[in-house]
Image 1 (cartoon, helix red, strand yellow):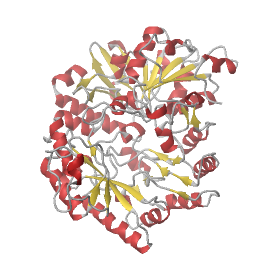
Image 2: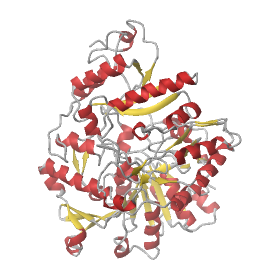
Image 3: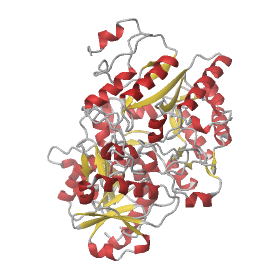
Image 4: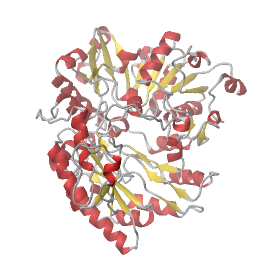
Length: 604
């Protein structure tokens, strides 16, 4: 059975009360790739009565917020699988016309700053019922953060929304602890002892904290006055969030109150992660969406398998390590193969798994050889500026998993569609096995740029490694008679990147390497990333050195325009792509006829 979403469904279960009611900005899809379903199923497994209210109407008389009444324990709020502002707006601040997490792909079913909006409504309607927020939107706004869409610093979401508690990071373990702490009513003393939560407190509470394990950050007001204080805050936050183990509590003043962030939990065990994926999901959208059109995000992942969490790449622009953590947490082969069997037996399965993936596809089972060294480590990346000598990047366990997946009856092919880290390969047979057995015709990688000083600010490897990958890829394809494409992803307008750097990128990628354009990405600075801090402050907070920033939309458009060219011999001038959307680069495709681009793009 699906978790109930209406009073009728609650009564069909014979329930006369609910313990927890979850509100989410996404459509309700009962599948382990969607946070609200995972949290709901975990709490259900603990014996709690849980309901979900997906995409409540916040514009009318608010009946969606009151239709199930008040829960016995708490309301849970999540903005959804994506940050609502990233979901709503392009990098050039234009409103998107679709929403992949809504039936029919329709936009307009969630508000801007979804978590704040939902929490304010719930606290107004039910002032005495605790509200707990989680998910990526709340997690990455737990402290003062740069908001690209208003071009200003915002205080913690705790101060803005009135929410009682924020669970940051991956919340499976914590949400169960929160529910237990609230069994007999809201107990602030118990809740404040939990790890991996954030809350507002007064000066008396902060004064009683252990000074040996408490770090006081610059206040929100100080960060607004001095952007470099904000940068220094970020360095402390990022270093602590990348610790394997820490007892440090962060405190940040906002007005006459304080945001308190307790230390993170250790990474989930394999058994805990397996439990999360093994719960009795329906693996489908709720029947309420029948006749309302497909949900694009569901269509994309329904025949895919997630094999691990976390990423030790530490890319400056990415929120994965900030939210999921630096330390990779892998599922067992048993759990993964059991899910493969479930996918194979889905009624609409046609023999192809769309992705055996993760944040980075080839980090499964990897980590430090000496865990004691990992406990002392404060590096945000295990791969930058060079690979950690303690990192075990052996691909043999992952290759053995691929082979076992290929043996499953009813499976024609299992693709690896998630991006792979080519700076992990060495002399491993991984690349050849993926190209030959697990590529759908396109292999995705993310060099992001070509110029070393930009790549250093991105925390990405030198472009020479991509050039080697390109040679190896085409050699493997030639040896095996495969006509496959390599799909590299690039970013324009990253801090440190000037027009001359984009020109150099264009000459190397479009000229020397003969890639033709289909998709590129303009940087969107998202909260709690190094890139967003550099974008706002104009300096690298780790070194204090100034960093060039393309701030205006015109500057950003001019940089992106270098990805476009009109024929084999001449790339387009800045301005040709002002109205172009995202594109992907592919290799070995025929160039457009002379003048074809001029039809589709405005004159410079």
